[in-house]
Length: 168
Image 1 (spheres, rainbow, N blue to C red):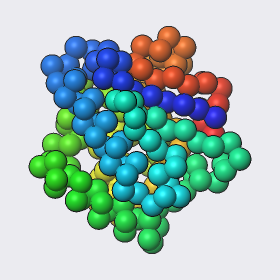
Image 2 (image 1 turned 90 degrees about the vertical axis):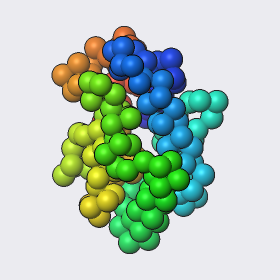
Image 3 (image 1 turned 60 degrees about the vertical axis):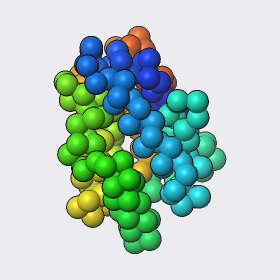
Image 4 (image 1 turned 135 degrees about the vertical axis):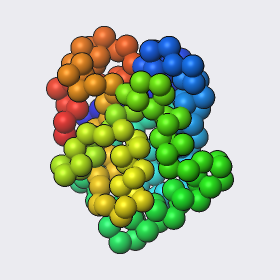
């Protein structure tokens, strides 16, 4: 399986000198902390934030959780909590996505469902807002798809993963 992580220092390199890189990394950490503390316990076991580190750690013997679709209770819980979290931060959806994306807009790429494929956290948040069913945790990548293999091998963006196992 995989372990993907961002730290403030590593996040800076993925923004390629973006002036708001540190601020963006802090927003991501806050979002990870929100996920860890407010989502249903069956979900939050796989999302944790500690010491400024955001990690997603699937558990091998519970593989079905990786393809959890947010319908019904889960979707409603997430939609309400996302809205409340953004309100507490004084952020709208666009501003939140902008803070995460940085100047080049290529930070925090996330593989979600087969229908949505690749998108930024903006896409993830928009999917929540639009009520689209998505996979909560599938695989996390960063920067552009065509650079992914080199990035995974060289670790330039703070992503750490086994590239042979990233597509579960």
